[in-house]
Length: 459
Ligand code: HEC
Image (tube, rainbow, N blue to C red; front, side, top):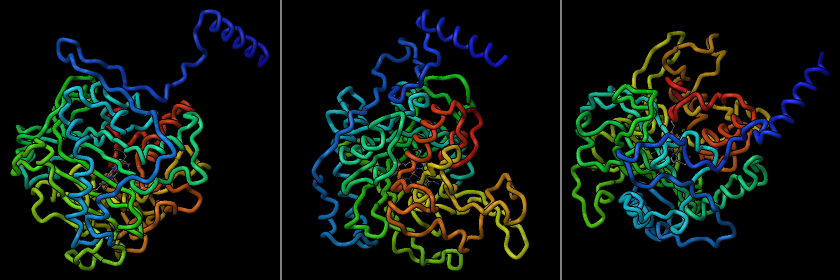
């Protein structure tokens, strides 16, 4: 019986070869986008092309953000100057990108993308769905009237792209050991986040830059299936940099800019209206924001002049998190045998979430050993989904909670047995799961979640 089946398969394979049909269509790691195109009458502009000619062997780059703070460690006193210098260092290229006038040639300018995500990228700008559905209640004070979806796009500078090249030299067999996942000093990653909520649904977006995109998911219109040409509005630009001199404990400074309609555009147009929300270089592990919610922080700086909407979703105790980042969530906590539900509680931040970047090569079907945000172990009160649909959280400030708020160098994983991803979540939350999925032919658990860790409505 078995021999007959094998023979049958063998004949089919031979037939396939004769007909020129490959037995299995291997997914292409360098695919540009998902191929769902707008009609030429609706959109006649250029389409997204993946930039992946990763360089290697580069000397350390010039780092003006270090000199902007006199080569001292970053602190709440000098973080504004640091953030401004970092913003200025990428301004020329980002203005060219945002203008979208055909002058953006990423390979020439030295900006690169991740492999393996083509099937998830829309065709015009290569954007991925970031968070599928952000509830309008998150932005009550700034008058959001409909939920929204965010679309995101990430660019790595030349220095950072060397790491992508080291990991993906063989795109079918990523190299994770031997320090391959570590970024060199001066590595910069920029992530743009657009929202489907326009000025009609959210006054905060009045005057924001908008880009056409082929949207498959749009919580504002309620459409989650058919690809449709729609507009995304630029809300947030993250700029993060590997800088162990300025941030010796974690090796990273995370900064974020947000659109501010009350700032006037200057010679650089809307780029001048992207104002700092803040910077973060550590998790303030010693500040117990549960006991003292307003306690001052020493490793996050928040711009006191940031627009209101962007401060509605700060993380735990005011640690930095942007409107695109899910730093505040509905959580369910057991204390003294009593379960309580906390709505829109700050339970994350840039570095606490990105600190979960790790990959367990022995269990690629799981991949990341810890969740993005504090999650109680399943046996804490018996049921794995206790507290659902709220997040089953350890008590804020407890030792379990604080596992997420430690300062570790990027080569130390959160959990033993995993390879640390040097704070890069695109790698461990998106790219490695997509590679593993292509390899195994099975949907990866992490591909069923949006970037906030929430299960997707449509897969
Ligand atoms: C609750 C989790 C969470 C928080 C908080 C968060 N991020 Fe992320 N971030 C992600 C995930 C997941 C990805 C990868 C998927 C994607 O790009 O959407 C990501 C991707 C990124 C990237 C692309 C490169 C990389 O490292 O993966 C940058 C840059 C970035 N985030 C910056 C920031 C900044 C700056 C903040 C704070 C203002 C922040 N993030 C807060 C989850 C988070």
